[in-house]
Image (cartoon, rainbow, N blue to C red):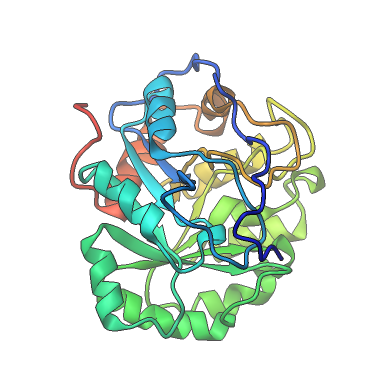
Length: 300
């Protein structure tokens, strides 16, 4: 764990000039998962953290969204800032109602702080059930979900694929909606019949549970066009088309493979959601219904 405020940043994990996608996204499209980092001089990292990313400020994100055809978005609080959600709140405020935010909070957070974050456009709290990540237990998080339900928030859960079956009974007890990050981080090399993906499909039978068909570049060791991972995302869109959203996961921190080209990630949507109706639901209707956006970032 890093405990040095002046630790050097890791190399950039994003492409300076991603390709322009061939696929034209439907008007009103949403990037439902990305992070903002920095500028470091303004937003200090948590003293104890797993990594120190390069600056990837909101202005860079705006330029990317213009390039790929995105007008709404969901800013997810990065773990390296801990419970100081300032960078996420700032990005949401700058978007003027077109972005929502997902915060990191402890389960004993005050009602006053939850109200403050809600007023700032935050609509969910993220928790990690992953190897090497400390925090509240699954049972504590699900109990905390009652407080989130009272203010119209959801739980966002990132977990190791090996824990999907174990956590399913706990997640099903949630009284608020649950969004599963990155298709449960299953290993695409194990194919569509693998036990963790089968467990995810079973979990998705619960009408409270949603998932992000993001991270196709993370769940495979193969580079683009991510042929191992696309069928898993496509299966989720096909079976649960009204409870899936998509995101770039920009700026792709802690990525083990080649730096993703966001234009290529967009073009993969032609296979993940092959029909216009599927893409309309995935990119526009579902996120608008789940996150309750106020406006678009620019006229649609």
